[in-house]
Image 1: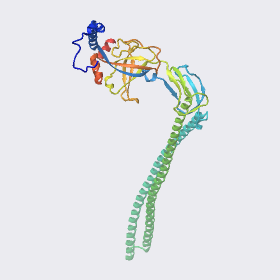
Image 2: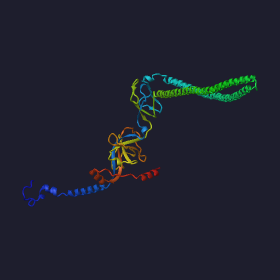
Image 3: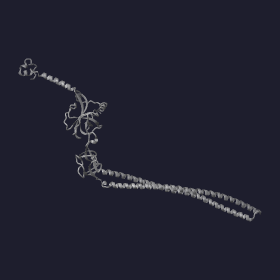
Image 4: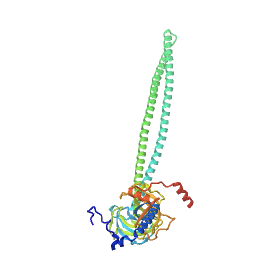
Length: 453
């Protein structure tokens, strides 16, 4: 009823006299309600002071610990055409087993004896190199012989020059002797002529002296001619030496030029032989690439290129293979704001898809169906999804991971941080504060690891 009037009827009417009033006001249920509220409040307060493990949750997938243990695809280094398959999907192959055979699609490599023919060309080039080396040796011997011959010829020419010089000296001495004799003959002729004029000598004596003077004069002219001839021989000897030098210099230059030409041709042939060696090695290696083999022990997952006669490009994926031996790991992704809180060797709980679990993120010891892991690697560069990748390995101190897990299945991760009261965690969540930032004690962790060892 509405409280419109200021007059109250509660003073004049007793509500307890009515039947409904008796049912309401005579019961003491409010005492039990107060007790319930009190007990509930005490339980809430106790719960608020219970320990709570701060955590960072994330999603990830199962992978392998080592890169070489992850699923991979096989490619061909050369373009080709599929000719024959030796395996089928799901088969187990060992390292080195042949998976498929391909053939060439480039016309440059259609010749089945290309390697042998290139090897024959290489052998011919090697013989040519030996021939050039022999030619160089012969020319070097010829050059040595020319130098020796030049030395002897020049020595012979210099001896002739020396003989000519000595002949000039000898002729000069003879000329001086004849000149002296000519002077004496002239004096004797003049003396005899004077004595004949005085009547002391006969005309015959004067004539004898005149004849002797003429003979000596003739000898003087002849000796002068011999001296000029000897001097001319010196000039001829000098000219002969110069001619020998010029002639042998020309021969030596030609021989040296032939040597350099032979060496240059030999080096060019060696270059061609080196290219042919590279071609032989490339052709041999290319022949081995016609068979795609397994790089490790594993299982054939999927034939990406199927059928016979299908062509493909170099580097194109042909078949997928999963290694037989691998160590499981989980890759989780965390937000950039949470990355500073994650450190190596931290404990993480993992829930795998397909394995039922009861998870209490703040009470990991109470959770059921989760498995222990440790952080082994943290990516230093952000991934394409805008988060940082963290790699987890099984924690050997906890229960082992399920053996039926396969690489690629999903997983949910909970990185365990600091232990705080529940009231603190509620206060942090209401204020949108990040979890407590702390650095793990590396000395303590290393000492623990040593004790475990």
